[in-house]
Length: 388
Image 1: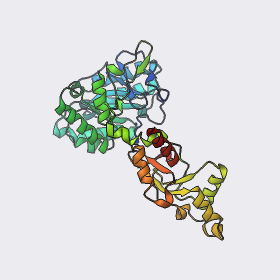
Image 2 (image 1 turned 180 degrees about the vertical axis):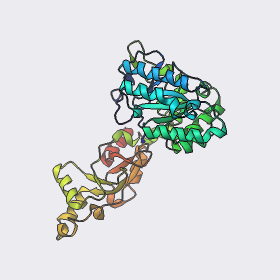
Image 3 (image 1 turned 60 degrees about the vertical axis):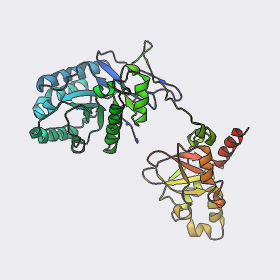
Image 4 (image 1 turned 45 degrees about the vertical axis):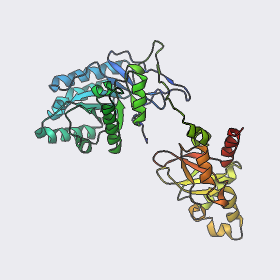
């Protein structure tokens, strides 16, 4: 999981839906007790969770790990190549590396790599065992396993454990999810925990989703990953993800659609690119109206308008002065708008500088990365159509 929010390790591939649809093919898994984890934005199955061998809140250690090993072998025989989420009792981790030997051996026999396994920690522990637990998890992470913390919200786990263990994934408690959306206080708790988990760099999974009201609540918390009966494969083997319900307010209707609907691919260059690099890009395609200079995180740092930039280069001594120098010297300040900005509001941004009214607007995502551009002419046509 981007922002960005990509759950899959680099070696794995997700089964995703065709853009614009709300269904996804389920992976070829026939092992009992394995359920798909779905990306709510794409409708794709990004991982599998083994729930048939759920070990509950406790676990004696070695015997439970043997059960996990059998699950790994069973799922591997089904040719399911997606990442696998396994429940791991805290007692098994505290017991030391020897208790986890059956799991390592099962991975070797199945041909899977540790980074394709997400170990979900469950069960409480004594404060005296905290050091052993953290050391054990660090060892598993060093081998390559991805670490998850389960039952967030009801488990007897101190919240500061999230900072010590740096989990890859956090899983909200199924018992907490079962009371949502009928219990506003628990819904508020779940939303706060989801925000906390994201703030420490972990992905969030909402399990046990049974109805669309729950799904709407999950989406409102900013959670993209979910699992449960509502998202189980149907008779056709496909998963139906209900689309989000957007209630348009009268004021929103007057402001027009969001700029994301007019998004065009942006032509980008690294902010260290020279003016000659930009000239080459503009020369390659006459329809390119702007080049956006971005940093290593794809955040826009400067905007090169085609007409003004080429005029500067074509002026007397322009190439000699600027050709080998960074193009950012000739760049304008980026006029960025979030992807949720209404068309009218975006036009107001465009009109703030009379000399740059028709410059392309840069559309950014939640963390300020460049998603593309919007041409002001497209916004004008849309707004004009609203008046008819």
